Length: 249
Image 1 (tube, rainbow, N blue to C red):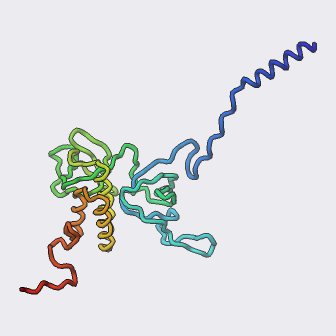
Image 2 (cartoon, rainbow, N blue to C red; image 1 turned 30 degrees about the horizontal axis):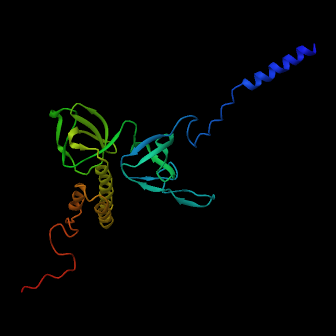
């Protein structure tokens, strides 16, 4: 009897040693994410406000019941990539590059999967369909435009130009060179600043582009749009504001 008990104890101990270690616990899911799924990535297609709350209201409740704060976190520019954490009706909760979070309208986002960034070094025709006969004579794509390439078909690529706006262009007109795309992003920001009535801020973008990307021809495309000559002077060759005309000899 004692022998049988001793054998049973030895076998039990051996079995316990042979059991595989327990799997480590899965890390907790990030806020707004389903367990086991990664946040989706999306491109911002048009400059838009990142909001504290999913509403168009200019002010929302703050940390105390009576306090209200501006419903604004930051302005996101076309081409910025965000992580989508949660969807709620017409709004999505996103995380941006500096780890801050907020809400955007769904319509300003383009899912990033399968999408490529590109730009154009020269003006290009826009087509309504991937067919040469579908050229749209009233639409052109400007050089320096940041395009998001959705798909390609034979000679053509379908591109997103802005929120809700798309077109087909000839693929060989596109450049996906990283430095060209970087300058296109700066051009998008500068053009937005001009539309916002901030031309001097747009010229500061040009200064940055000339400093960091002097070898990219698109920099001078921006300079011409802003009325700046290659040397930084007025594009028309005139005198800077406030300068006296030279006296005749």
